Length: 234
Image 1 (cartoon, one colour):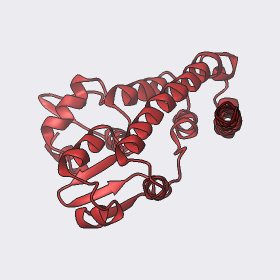
Image 2 (cartoon, one colour):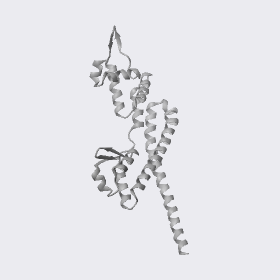
Image 3 (cartoon, one colour):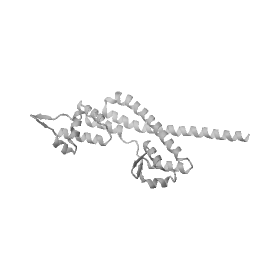
Image 4 (cartoon, helix red, strand yellow):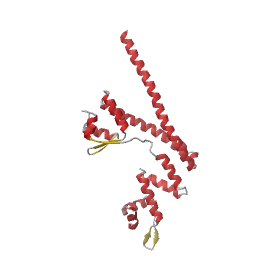
């Protein structure tokens, strides 16, 4: 085990933990010696790659279990890539605390920054602040320059994140229940193609729905303002 740990650059205790979680099969025994093979080495490299892509150990265990039950690991990983590939291609932006203060003059405090970071809209590492989207940050700054209080913009951002999480959870539940768990799920190659077709459809549905909602809300607000003007005129 010590030699295997050295080969993959992991502590022995990590390999023992993997064995306890049934991620790593036991070695072949030769007397009191446990012998590990290239299969164990390959297994650990697969685990490492999946961990780097954000998988949990439990999710990796299920993937490896599917592999052991006879499913082609390439098909299993193809499904995984189709599902977990990035949906967002936003460009993050990192700046100093001073730069952020310059972007929002007189409206940035350490306390407010901590609250925004806790809501998941920013990452703070000492004096370095990273926003997940340059476009989103520029839009926020535009609203503030137009006179919207930064507290209102941040509150709207937090509420928007919550509602978008709910919408995403709905799409994921439908896909999991009726696509992955349905007849298409029994054909790995077909499932990958189906998921690839559904991805842009989900995004278009949200974009089109938001645009239509904006049309309705703008018309309603115009009617309200015009009605108020007419009442005051009378």
